[in-house]
Length: 139
Ligand code: THU
Image 1 (tube, rainbow, N blue to C red):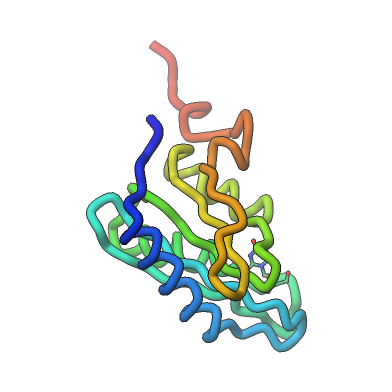
Image 2: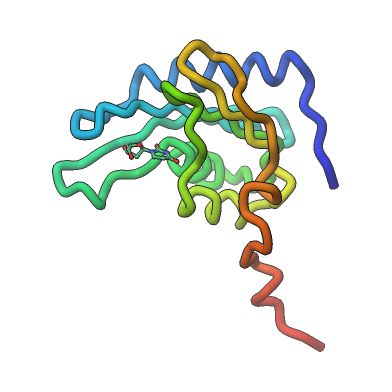
């Protein structure tokens, strides 16, 4: 079911993601990403990308935020905001991780000034997703 985000929640998410972006560890790509995730019960989790000299070990900001939430017991996500210089969109791996916890999660993409470039949801970002429902046993 479509979820609704209040203006104050959107502001909080954007502010938190912008602040998280300042903590990005991205010495190789120099592409800093900040994320903020709001769970349905109001808990807030931030994330930034964390790169590694062994490049593939790098983790994206979105997954840091999701993993922080889930590891704290929060699996129902109302919305996630992602801030990059150019309003870039989550990578495929992050879309899949977001989809695991609900296709209705709202996704807000903003640029480095906090201007919203796109507001959508996981269902739209990952059409025909492979989800836990695919693994449910029949009968
Ligand atoms: N990055 C993210 O944090 N999120 C995405 O969805 C796209 C890519 C990071 C990974 C890497 O540190 C840098 O951006 C360049 O790919």
